[in-house]
Length: 495
Image (cartoon, rainbow, N blue to C red; front, side, top):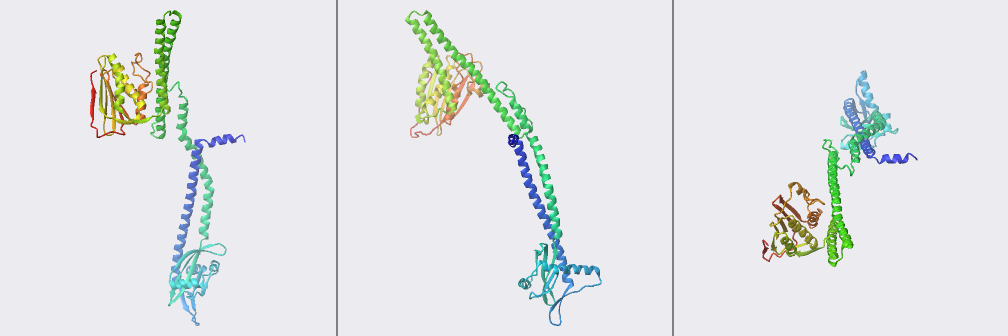
């Protein structure tokens, strides 16, 4: 009983299952091949016996003469040279398994061996004589010995007679039995050989997998930079290794971003908390007037708001990625929504000395989540104004066609370096060189924008040049539009 768990564990090995499948396949193949060759051997032997019977049938036609005696009865006479031993041996062989009957089915001559096979019935004999046809078949004697019998009609002096000659298949059956015995004896040896070969081949086949598993054990969160080298075979295992390396690369990037995010968040949370604590401590220790208490509370409220925004952004993104944030879909005019949001950002642009323009093509009815699209537009406009210098320009355009509603947000700001373009929608990613910028966020806004676009089955494209500006193009599918209303342009420029 102590070996049972070990045996059960071995049966779960992939190597064992591959070997078992290999053995079952080859066992079935060997059995099928054995049956095929046995049948082929039997067919070849029967064909040879049939050819011999055809030759002997020709000899019967040469030696057998049909005559009538004085009582007008048909007689079978074997005409040959009795002094010739070779001819005598041939005739004796023909007569050893032979039946001769007249047209009425009366037996004229029959050998003892043929009696064991069974004399043909007169009815069958008469039918064959009337049909004037011959037959070849395998018949079994009373002692289970099998014979091949050739029967037909011989006409001599206008007297048709029924003649049947046979040949024993004992030698053929003996050969078949020896073949069967030998094959069944060798079959277990061949199956054992297949098992050993399968066990060896499966080991060779799984060796790269075992090596892959051993190398993957060395990969952990602390050394995700390790990669498994390709074998160069170009097979499925190389594809698996390549896929695994890509996965580890993504995990490494995720770990790096997560560590960076943890650092950034701890800094973002620590700074306002420290300020809040310091302001409150100073107010408690030194403030003597109402204005001093009020100023301390206003500073604390500002930093609390900053903390609240940070936590809110993290919560929204977490809900979006976990599927807890579902879209509340309704139909609305996208132009009206964008116009309302843009009016709020106009004030922010004026404060920074940025020229702000709005271009609308009314109406633009889409089906989507109004709140999420408001967040999308707000994020894009906020980034555009934040990274556009004094006297720069920011514009938002909304247009439509037969299938899409398009939002374009463009600015003449800093621009995005080419090496950063593939990563701007990644979570926690911030363009290198901006980490010390006090206006830089946590790298969550564009990631959330990307999720909103995907959730609405839309698309987003970015075109940017360092020092010249950035252009975001967002497209949403249109579900309703009043085609009878002519398009009208509503523009407010260079404010």
